[in-house]
Image: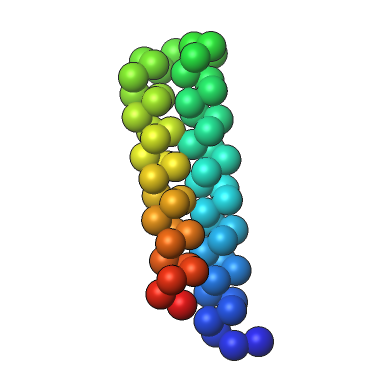
Length: 63
């Protein structure tokens, strides 16, 4: 396999994990399960979703 394909696979795995945690943080913020402020949890979830979208853009456009 070429290094580009391996790098795309690694970026996709990181992106999927980040978007999963982002959605989980946003979902948990609505139930207030953890003792963290809701605004902080939504901010962290939104940032993780933004990071994962940028990882997908990098993986599919630049490589």
